[in-house]
Length: 418
Image (cartoon, rainbow, N blue to C red; front, top):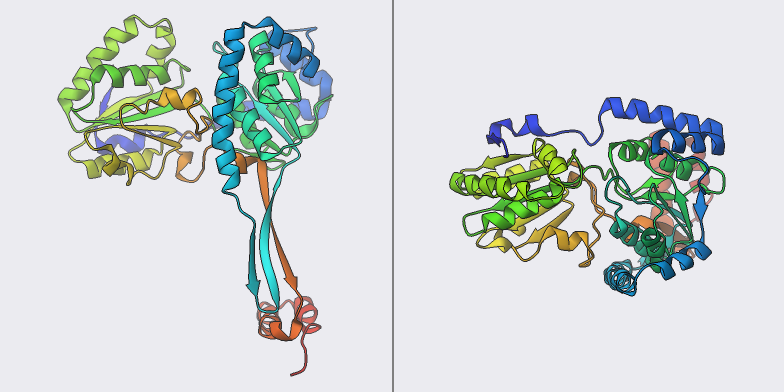
């Protein structure tokens, strides 16, 4: 099921987060909406989503009606998951401390401030991800964002009810690159956003990349990835189930197995075949399996090297002593340590956010968190110039070294005779 590769072939299997062809096509969509405004947005919705004459936006009154339409069991489920996400987000927020430290002649430090307007993208496709709405909106609200918008190609009662439970203000019934354009440029009733977050397909990922000069984006969160590191202490049927759980997301998803046992890789392949035949989403999962691979390593040093190079979105460790490997794996979106720590539990609200970097960008990018919706502002306060004279004199000297006479003059006005 999973093609076998050697560690020497690893570089050839790595793919960029966004391909050139998608970037070019997405830029055309963005340009149309930037220039054409709301009419161009409506045209894009009709062209790419097959809808016309539908409402463009929903608000709190619509959310409250939707809450009454879903079952009490669904309401309680959404509330429980929202509470778990909020608890984790609150712990993150509380870790973001203001800083104040003494410097010569005064103090310096930083404060944290929430952004004003956030756009949260929620994938629709074949499987509307209500969980992504909760993950993004609850985190934005916990950060203190004033205006929170949701955009999704699916506006079902469950989705609108989730918007109410999570604390969203408005819902844009729109998907794809066109939704990101609306958030970036401010189209119709949609305001220009300070930050756009959320996972999506390659079109959404490309659009976020292309508008990142206008607003903050969380990361390039494209098609899902799962890398499982396992040895013969793991259960092949569980590893196979975890890989298929990611493969069913999208035909572009990527399941990867790294193991020190060829026999175990064979066992996982057999389980993949059995479970795939019984999976409702087997057509999508089977296509996604072609994007993945199995790598049999000679030792755990090779496994760590491969994981660090791939820098996957999700990384599960199912080995006899997972903590030993966990301490060495520092380049992934989220690490799942030990067999009980299933990646799907992260997907569905155990605590950490499931919006994570893909396409190898976890080498330098972090997953969605409270600080995504906040900005750090530094400050400087000099109150005793005589005590700051070394700093002032150094500023004069550095300005002269760089040839910036205006800077030197500005600093020189602060020089006090000894």
